[in-house]
Image (tube, rainbow over all chains, first blue to last red; front, side, top):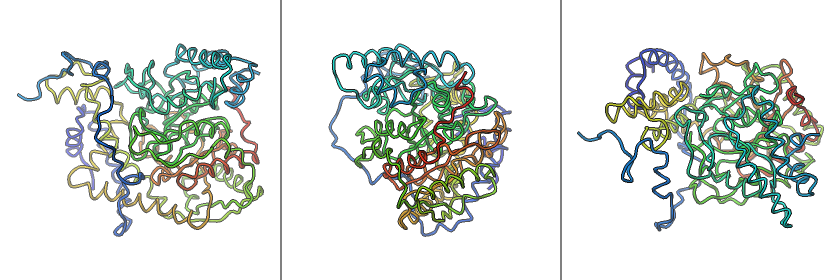
Length: 94
Length: 491
């Protein structure tokens, strides 16, 4: 599956990356080459194989009991913009 | 002899015997960093205050008659993608250039609890994405054996620091080879424990099913000592294994290879493998045989698909993990946002370097509607096939698989930067191990082109680090390469 400029523009939007024209062009070429390499995986017959997501043995659950965690003041320590105990952002809903 | 030249065990024992103090050992390494790091760029930040406070604590404890802990007074460097309170954790990225984490990584807590003295945070490829440390936003780390060459990556800073005597121990992280490759390039020992052995709590996430923290040292025994300090279950990491950790420092004392079965995969000799690297690894296999090991040829038929599978899976996980960098909670925020989407997009465009952007986009693509089955799901099935290749080999009675760590010696700076794919291909021998979640170690095995170090890699079954360190240690003793030092050592 060849990847073109429109695909890269779409992916950049999904990834929340605002790329310049120049970046778009360079990345399109590089990504196309890499994705072509991914197509190597199609050579294999993996019909019978189960997907291996990770090596951990099963889901590890714990009791739903609250425990001390990061205090709010520490969580806000590195915030670029905050106020009244909240992270401050431009309006999300018009 | 300078204190910085001592091994971790020698440093700890000298301090425990009161022949020197932790303060003096820390000072020796800090002075060494000041003297030579301008040429190497291994460190992003030195943590003198933290170091001297930790050293003082060691000296006070010993003066009060307390027994020495496993890493008592030993200076250690920490890769800058692991959180440590009191210092920055930048991940070598503009996105986090001023970030000061509010908590310690478990691995950092554990080495400190064992008495180690953190002397600084080391350079890496941005967000651990790379094989050369050239993707750092703060300049590459240079190879102490030849400063026109890369130190390898992504844990290049930690590897270069240990190789050049700036620290006897360092922590790195390994997702596709990021400890083992720089260890091989810098002529030192680097190990990646079984996935789940070391808590990932406080390790900035790149690919959550592949990331693992591990040790760098100048010999196998020191590496085993450090591994022993960081391995073990952590309830704060849900992928952390409850499997009991054997005494790894003791396992590394092993000197015999009698009765040990070593497997050499036929697929490893391939086009990209440099002749001299191949020769050194064959010589290493001969050493193993002379020392009593039984050498057999084995097959890992899916080897050639590992890189493709990895770069689908790792980038997919990275695209998810790096979505947290949005200018809202911490880190860089753009000054030019009109709206919320603009805040995200401009922040991320400004904060991330090229390789990080490439990988986020590859991952997003592989997971996107219409491509998920063809790429991501397929890659996960290939991953399983790779794991089963190793299971078959180990089930047939092989104790360790052996092969080259890297296809070539350290390359010249800039050589692989114009073609990202050529950089990815450097991971050919290391990457399967992360996919299969196995433990592996790289040990020096001689010199290749232009006198640059070559590493031989040992791979053991899951959770068999004791076996891994025993075999590696016996090889090291029989081969004599542990004593080799780069020209910079005498600077």
